[in-house]
Length: 243
Image 1: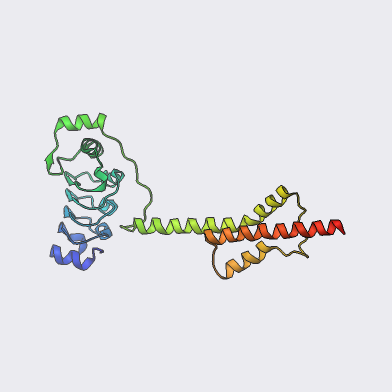
Image 2: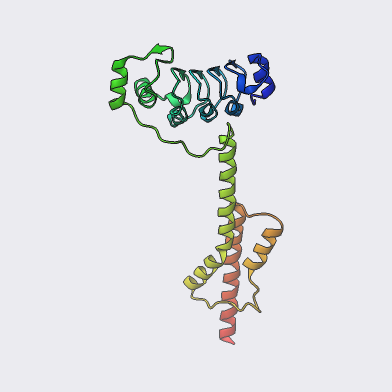
């Protein structure tokens, strides 16, 4: 579910987004909070018990002091990169997210190394000793990979993956000619005359553009057909040699 302007103004009892300072959206089944980019005055926001998967939207809230994100779907501590530019952030609750990982100590040290201005993390006060240890035991995070705007990361990744797969499929189809040449070479056959034996690849590629792209099974069928044609051609050439 997407956090909308109407929802924000209703819950914050405000008339304009830029005037919203506090917002409570606990347990609202939210997946997209990109509208936070339009709330520069936001100081406290509660997003716990939702399905938020990126911290990028709140990076546009320079006045943010408290961020509650317990039990969401933040995938990696690389998302902390989006919080580094928030100089007023003092309270962060990030527990029960996938990014916390199996090592609680490493998780806490990494968060504190990257956000040394925090005074409370996961409802536990931050000590000077922890901050000193974090410099040694924590890990520095870098900008996460491009995942689109808002919380459409998984959808965009899926779309890009599909595009890559389609491109690879088209490349495989175009490579059939090279495969045919390679097989003929291994069989010691001559290249067929284009007039006598029109290119199967050419016809198939044209058909593919008009109808559909080849999947894995389609490519296997093409390979088997090519081999079958080559074997038939080999028999024909043997008959011609005998004559």
